[in-house]
Length: 125
Image (cartoon, rainbow, N blue to C red):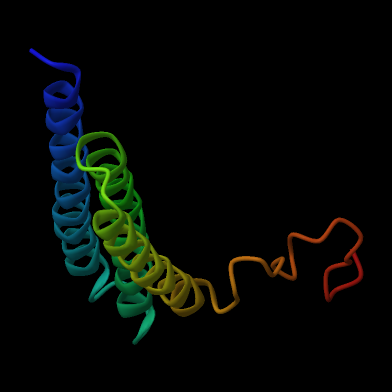
């Protein structure tokens, strides 16, 4: 088996893992939602569901990007394919950033208020 065939199979496997991560994440998020639906205040179960589902999608997108990079750079390295890869990466990165903003309520490069080293809690502790 040639090197490019091995990398092509690895790329396909990486992309399959990305899809699997999204599917398992959607299933897990749905189960958690159903378990919490009647046990928590209104809207909290939905927020938990959205947060978990968004994280699963972001992780799946990372695997898909990795598979695309392997496939394009090693197996089919033409300028056209590299340009298409660049566009795909831009779109998926944009989606990841928007999902992160939706989930966390802040941009990925912004530090959460409770993560800053010197910040005090509102109660003074």
